[in-house]
Image 1 (cartoon, rainbow, N blue to C red):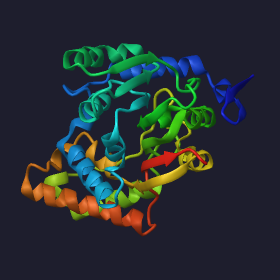
Image 2: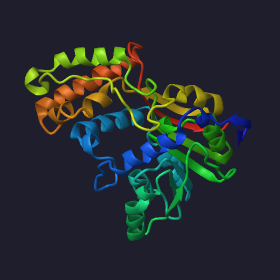
Image 3: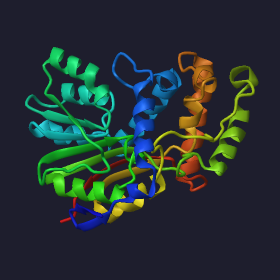
Image 4: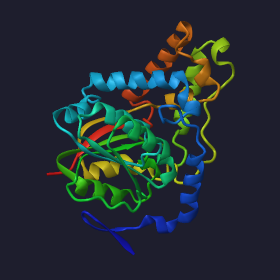
Length: 306
């Protein structure tokens, strides 16, 4: 059975998997993830080193003219925004507070239980957030209905990427944009072996008093649809959309900053430790820029063809 997309029938690739089990694993995993007060993912993702790393990424995007593009779009008028795989909706709440009055943001996720706290926060702040239970593998998007579609760390959970991208292209209003912040590394593992080896050599530049013997390791097991087709995200984006801005980055710092020990030991609140954290970020950036390592992360803004 084929699923209809914007450019004709697209195969339902979920039939190749035990799909019910994968969805159940996704719901179970994200239902028990620690969440911060701002409704972002907590735990190792709340390390100060991880927040510092992302500030550096955002600075690089801003310098290249990319980080402000979405804000520029929103500055003109209220927007109709669709968020794919919104999860706890922390970023959607932040965007709703920044965008012009009258903007509406529709959050989607396969696990509607994740919306509860965001719904209460939106009501309390008078923000127009709407919530829709939806599976991205089968999401139907209204034609020409959305000024901005956003996907942050959700596409790497999608099996029917071709179908979803066709739906997004169909759903963008004239002048609409598709904003993607995503991981694009090795399928199911994210970290390439060469990147891990390089990262561990780079960690030798840091005094043992800071990092000890902790080293980066490739994950051995993943849950649900984590990284199931992430190597194909960029080629399929290019097949369906026209890049307005695109930056591929991050060869290993995600695994340093979210490491249970390294992420804490490279605390940017300490001046010495921050210098070494910045050194590692600079080494990571140079390795990608010079083609030494493949990037694991993408920041992109796209438009439909035509």
